[in-house]
Length: 448
Image 1 (cartoon, helix red, strand yellow):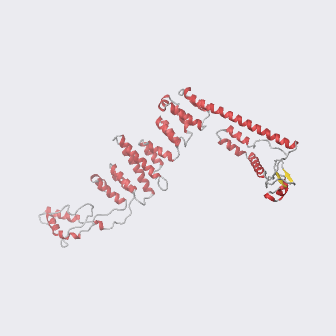
Image 2 (image 1 turned 135 degrees about the vertical axis):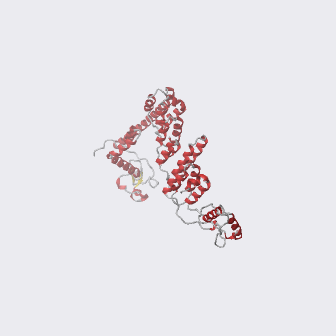
Image 3 (image 1 turned 120 degrees about the vertical axis):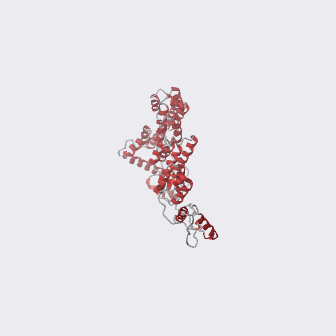
């Protein structure tokens, strides 16, 4: 680490590879072999200079520096000694056969300061370290956050729009790939992504974080605050089906300024009104009030929406009237039948037993629902139970269902919190009240 910056400055590729191997736990030092003749290095002749060269030669035999050869500094005598031992070349140790030393790699963050002013080598180092196995959570967070920052740093270099798009694409891919891990958790904190994206004007990073946090409305609001109409429309089309309340907000934004409406076009306004109408997101009066706040939208833009809405409500009124008439007629018919059963004699014309299907033979039991049975079928045949209860076996199941429904309605009539909750959550409160009224839970209870 003492000479790291000097080494990176003069041989960046080799030094970066050494750092990668070392911090991934795969570093293997190269072996050095000094040339020794009869166990003694003979002093060389030639005065003081030759003695100094010999001293340097001896010193290098004790310094295990990678990539440093013992023949880098040699006197003429040393060179002759080397030639003398050339025949012993088989004794040279092959560094590939030396087993890699066992050690615990330090945290990668300790090497970050060595790559100052060398962003390309730093990115290579970070990418290689991220591919390592058995990374701790803190190391993975440091590497991912720093690599994300370096991608954004490279994207801000003034080398053309294509250069910026390339590095921003890598930064976006980094966040997406981290989100697809087994635990589906991004090592980079949302606050760091937001901060770095804001400082480098990387809008996609901010958008990704808000998407993952479910803040879809904030994404749309960020485009509208920046007056980015194209981005707002793109966000509306992407997130509108998932967040319907974006359409009322889009209606207010499109009609806030004539220039914004011109950029979007009248077709986009019509599409927003259609989605509001289909989803019943706003009442017609609310739409008119929203458009009336600014003198931007014209009556011609609003006319198709109002015409379609009025026509549909007209059809609904006709359908509801027809249904009401049908229900009213059916109710009158049932009331007449009930009155006739209590005041007029009933005529039974059935010729076959409703249980066994055989021709009726005396004794026969008739019910006011117009079902007739053999007396023997009611007592035990055909699986009919409760003959003495005065209830038709064929209608017993339907009657039990009606009694259960009525009992449920009476229980709901006492639970006012259910009605209140349904009324608060309903978008059509009048319809909710009508539905509860139609269930009979609001009718007056008869006192027996």
